[in-house]
Length: 116
Image 1 (tube, rainbow, N blue to C red):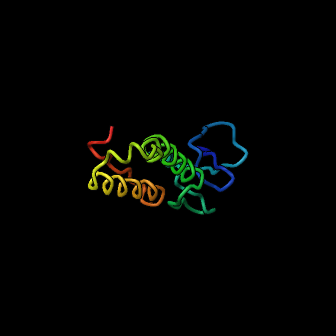
Image 2: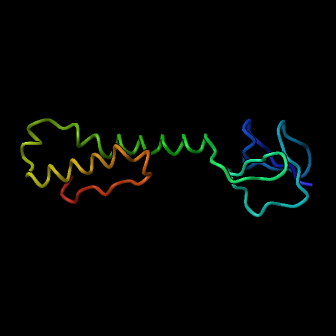
Image 3: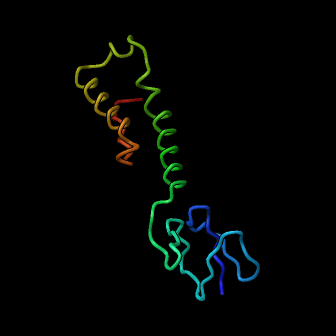
């Protein structure tokens, strides 16, 4: 029998043992081919679910990327904005809106080619 560790929400942690045990675990008579941390034990079977910790980690990474890639351009001063053409301002605005939506869409927008 193989023991697979579960977190407080019954999601697999990725840890398993042939001997010993964990505080929270499920014991199976066969080895899982791949430990998917989005599998949640419902008491009888594993179900595919969204691990809240993984979702929050993904959102944090997207927010950090937005801070680094987007806000450094958007927060430039008026003098910089005055050098942009109307088309560049529109493209910048659309790119900015896509970045604001990144935590919903999970799609990192392509930076305008002229933006350096």
